[in-house]
Image (cartoon, rainbow, N blue to C red):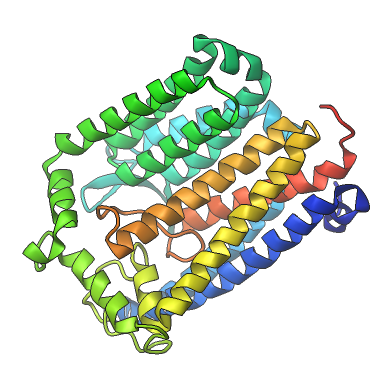
Length: 385
């Protein structure tokens, strides 16, 4: 195994600099997220579990497990992930099927998304994101020319994505569905698919998502509430209006750490889906922009590592980095969009901030893969192994 500092050799100065930024910003986001989630959760934890630090302790444990997952993905060579991509896809599909089996999957708030594992719950859709990303990176490396020149090479991975989406919608998990579609389509677009094929796929995807939205009354209700949440602020528009109040109270510099009013049972899911709104209330517009800048810097660093890998013809590593960047930026965009009223309300975590063990495990494992790509760059000399 390459040691971490071997990635900082003069042979990969661009990737080395990007890796430093990635690790620094990742640590910053993890620590900031811990503070934000802790502040947003203490009142809910005290009232629900009789322990104000219940969520803080579990989130700390999730971070430890996530860092272990990061360590595992860093230690394993890229060739391992390249060779086992199909097995990861099968494992992810198996989890999505298991979660739908009565008596196995756990149902919460009308959605069957979790597999109970003793004191923890594993969210199958989060694991599927990781598995699908690894599979697509391997496929795009092996079938690059076919994807670029033939409809079949383009449609084969989309059939796999379509199967995944059907299982996600059966849970239902519309947020994970959107992120998965965006990530998969983005990776295929970057692989050099013909523009006409991509636009046809994009149009079909938008039409399908539109049909999915209107197929369920609760999704239509959310869409209507999104257009004018104040028209029904105590029912369908309640979450969004309370989030907007949090942003309004924060003004420029915020009300101070721990002084949020909205987390006092006004804003539901304050420590999960709407943790960004509480952060904006306590640290204001400048604090919110600082977090967004950190996310933008992290994504840019991951993309730079991916670009370095592509230049050295380490295409599998490049697609891994591009997919990780798309996945994280997509989740941030949707979560912040929901918090600020730019997008209809839906349950989707903010990476490194929201409470949720599965999300922490998957995002840190992805960061480990990116780190591994950077570690292997100095050993590449213009060709695949």
